[in-house]
Image (cartoon, rainbow, N blue to C red; front, side):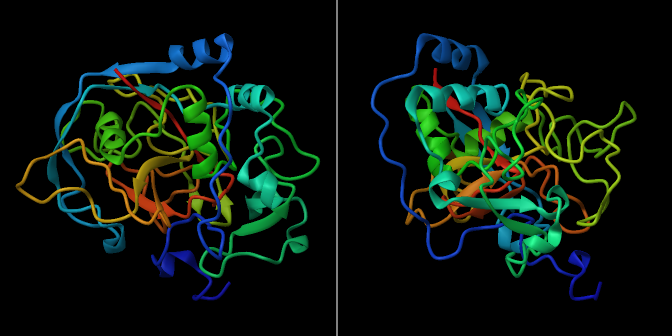
Length: 324
């Protein structure tokens, strides 16, 4: 491995991968509404939050291109949010009811992390800045590592290979929406002020690991000290003080907002912001099981980056928001 190949030598990009050639097309509208069983399951996941004022963002940028600093004062109205990301078994029910085909299915491929494919040499195509991804034909939510794999035994793991369009389609079908970026960060903080993580400032407290991120040398050696090489169950590790699980680590989560600077201005209050624009890039939040301080230290409550809404990977999922 050369110095140029070593991800610790650069912080140009996130660990994620994106489809090239534009933002793709939105999924067709789904007729009808969710079954009582699916709707009840989604409703049972939702946690009401009171809303209010909070400080959004970081004191100082770790990666200036992320535009996550300085802090600014934001107000959000009361809302409900999923206590977890959407797991495989609920996404499977959605597909069974609607016949929905995800972006990865219509495009017939998705990105799989190189350590999760059996024969790495079979997959030469990978993004230049993120060479640890492999373009695997047939990799979809129900076959996360490609043909011959399935989600058996991972029913309670987050659904992955999910594009922004897929997440928005699911949300609309069950009468919900994707979280605004400000709502997401308010929820992730769990009522704590000025902390890096949903539980405080220490990455690994004495009580043990609190989220699913990379240990070892990224992207070649994962010592799995937290118990997982890939995703973990959506409700693994203790929740934050709002009762929400895995707000950092495990999988990146799509937000409603188009990419741009944090909302508002320093020393000027803003209420219920959501950024709309071209739609070419969407905000993702929370980091994933691939985040590590040597390359992508974006596993903190203020961390943010972006991806095209048609991009799909083994480390991106979503959670829902509903109006109170």
